[in-house]
Image (cartoon, rainbow, N blue to C red):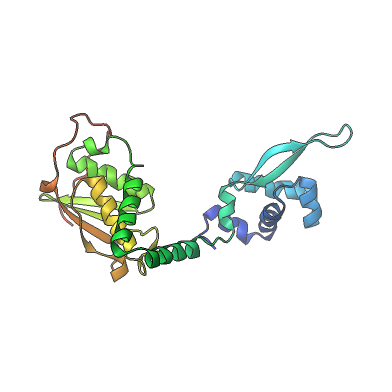
Length: 239
């Protein structure tokens, strides 16, 4: 099961809301009346729980259903995309097996090419104009982009040297048996910063974070004098 958001944890703790999520997952959609019948509850009580789930962005009403005769149309309730995080998935095993098969089929050089390509495609999603920034602002932009990917990145600068830290590994359970992913991180940071990162701390070695030392003197000149991103320069004097 995936890590649950607070809203999902609350839904899981409450048995009625948990049951509503399970019914909607199995059936795809349901009306208040149908849910009340399944739960053996009064419709007004079901509506109360649905309102809470809607407020947590776990349930929505994609459409209404007309009833026979002159009755009012009934709302049809369904799960939101976020609600599907509540249910077990097999992403971890799929990723593990995919990496294992790739390593069986490819040479180390070919695997390196795969990781390099993955880093390039990930870097291509970064904000446009990043490569035109001066070194410190480019690192700042890179840190923001890495954080958006789940790395919880931060950095500090002292005497011409930058230390970029990633406090979270988005694929920690895969990185230990598959060091190629750590190589991909190096490629990615190199592409984002335009510098040559040297890893000086490693989560898989027991460190609390991965850290990369970069010499600002290695940075080339910006490709354009225009700053495409209005980002402040963060300057920290000591590690």
